Amino acid sequence: MKKILLVVGLGVFLAGCESVLDTSPYNSVTDASAFSTADRCLLTLNGVYDAAQGSYYTSNTTENRGYPFGSANIQQGDARGEDVVNVQAFYQITYQGTYNSNSANCVAHWKGIYALINKANVAIAGFRQASQTGILTAEVATQYEAESRFLRALSHHEALLHWSRPYLDGNGTQVGVPYREEPITSSTAVTNILNTPRMRVDSVYSKILADLDFAEANLPAKIFTYRATKAAAIALKMRIKTHKGDWTGVVAEGNKLVPATVNPLAPTSVVSPIGAWALTASPDGPFANNNSTESIFSVKNDAVDAPSTNAGLSRMYGAANLNGRGLLSLSPIIYNDAEWLCTDKRRTLLTVAGTNSAGTQSIFSTKYRDYNTWGDYAPQIRYAEVLLTLAEAEARVATGVSTRALDLLNTVRNRSLAAPETEGYTAAKFGNKVALVKSILKERRIEFIAEGKRWNDISRLVMDADYSTGGIPAKAVNGTAGLTNFVCATAYTPGQPAIPYADFRFIWAIPETEVTQNPVIKQNPNY
Image (cartoon, rainbow, N blue to C red; front, side):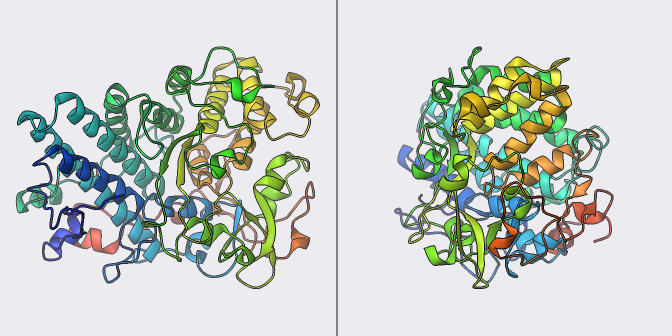
């Protein structure tokens, strides 16, 4: 992924107008010349994707730790939940909720998100100008803008997840995050930003959906897994609308990507009408092939450009005896859960008993397998998520136990079962739709373990009386290890207490540098 010279954000701009000046195949490409040819416009777009893949970890290092979407959102999203264990100290602040306004991971994630947003905004303005001057055709310029707006929407939602209370707390009336649409490339732009406070949550969601509507209308049906497509925009809209509790909206979006009839005993036969996305035959398919039919949108890592040893997905999640670092293991909480059948293929294809960073044994994910160059793509949207999100929405809008919801759930689950004809769920298992939704939510935890989606669900469900965790769930004690803790279908009692939703630690502190340099950005309470 090529890098490009662009001003990255307010904090950096105010610190002496310093830019992240990355070299590119064109020597010293500036934001003034980045749109002077069609090739340079494409290079600029690649630069926006590169900003999604990795930004500098701190102001005094050039280390790429995968902020925001090259690996960090996955690791942070998992470490905030209960389905992984932080084996040593590396993710302890996130895992135990002891962060503050100077915590390095929180600061790096904020800076990485808003650096990406600013690169997207610079690119959007440049593509529009390139269209007006004839450097790009209107069609190409609009597609490039749509890709940038997809990334802008993804970024703002990631910020909401960590720094704002969820939409359903007050129906969007809580304080959100600043939604930035103006490129910060001048002192005038800085002045404008300094007068832009945090928006209400509902206003941020409205802008996110506007960006995604534009993206859906102008993105291609199929391109590379690491570039945004029409299906990626629709799938992200589905995710956004789950946070709003707009279940009829989720169904409407989902039906664009899922055929009206599905056969849960033939999972690969369920093919998206847009882009021909489909589940792989085996549950490890999306991880054996970065460009699988299931991988709707991933952030590209490769041997040349990947997060460092302190961030690579295979390094953090991989067992030490496989050349990982053994820092994030699965938790006995999810591994021992009886709904994750002992014969489930995901237990053998996607987990392994291995050495952890403390020199003892744990159960690790094997979703990320490039232990030498750390080039595993960072999965952001898979077709399995589309199917399970639609299943949840169909179950919620139904009055009883929805047949379509059950079929969609079984479509994902059955491909991992040893005997789907007998082990698949039937309607008789569920006394009501609440029970069905609970099983769908449990399947999400099993299917997406080590993909960072747990915090997304904890946040959106915390105000839902039927499915709330009550806050940050109880967890295994930091450092829990030893294979005696991991026994299928054996209840496990977590030792780290839950943090209730009312506690200020449910959301992160805005970085001190941001609130100091930008006084209209108010700090979250009690930080």
